[in-house]
Image 1 (tube, rainbow, N blue to C red):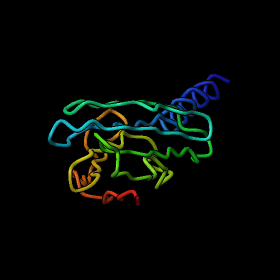
Image 2: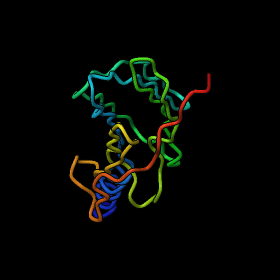
Image 3: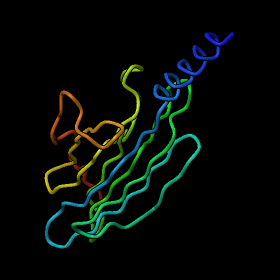
Length: 141
């Protein structure tokens, strides 16, 4: 019986470590004092809209569901007239063995960049220090 209790305790620790949280960070690295408008959502949550001043960021953390299907979508627009925008998937599970982590997005003049970090905020073992993922889209008049 004692061995069974120890087994359950170890199994619980493994499961708690496996089902972890995730996060998204949106940073405004635009030039010319442009503000960044953001709004993000998942199946269960809506964040924003928020205005991020130049040189600032907004971070939010969340639990990942047991099935590993947690996904956050975001829309970013760069001011002052918010003519340039992008809609994108800001967080999704890529590998069920490596769920969680912080998806660090950076809005720059030429596009939106991503740098992924692990669940403790450290860089991932094979980092993609920030690389451009999306270009800005221009609103049609």
